[in-house]
Length: 408
Image 1 (cartoon, rainbow, N blue to C red):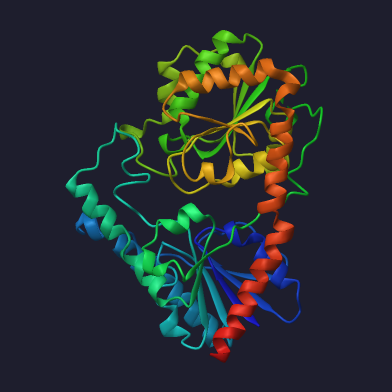
Image 2: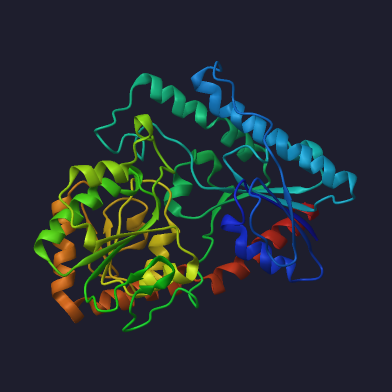
């Protein structure tokens, strides 16, 4: 079978699935992406480049649609090149929402087109109106509605679709729920595993916390309100006052991935460091870390904090649980789809740094009392999100769907 993967990043959610399919000599696997760096064994990678950005004078309501069309056009041109060289896919699996699958049914009408859908935008009831500091007005409502235009086109044209969590699937219009199967990407539990007594030493960045008994961890792609970074930093200021020997490790980049950036190039990290009385000798920003070093952080964690708007669920939460972390998480969807308060983690009010700091303090004082929650966190991932179980299901879904559709 000839399989074409599409994702503006690489390899993202398709890392394990593309690798596993490429190991089977019966399959030919191609991955089209904008990301120049990286490779996967047996996978032929082709890089596409979007010709331009949306025009500044384009109406703000449809700028995201123009960007999606430009993305789809770039992928179409790469597809033309593949077709000219004799590669005609039997199945296409694309990460939808950015427009990369928009025109591929026209280029490859015989191919089965499958979509991976993370999010459908809503003006009310999820992320957009979650924080009262950022009210939703009529203009924003219109922008959000139009942001779904390309997503709906991709969803309508694909043959079948996946969504990683029930919460994310439920954001889509009801008439598409039967088309969207809930199937998570999976967590590599053999890699993300507990290591009792682990010490945190990262010589590559000059960090040695081997003599520290209390380590609070936080991991994020970007330091932003969507992932509760301001509230976390306020909680850090409080916990540093209460626990003079506690160190805090923040993994992630000083940027905004989701939501609005601050004006004039200011970052939320800069803002919080200027605003709060923090002991920087006990606050460590690692930047982006390779997986092995990132795992060391999780394995050495005394308490791991995960906060999020009601939005897309982060891998980092599940990876932390897989490592047996004691997770203190926001009482928000889709976190509550995974964490049951007092059973496999602890839930707190997203907007309360006091509550976050209090819970951290309780965990650090509690010692072994919270070990059952750590064990149950690991067990939850093994039972529901283990890559070893979910990857065969993904492969079965893709190949069985292809054969079923071909026969229908």
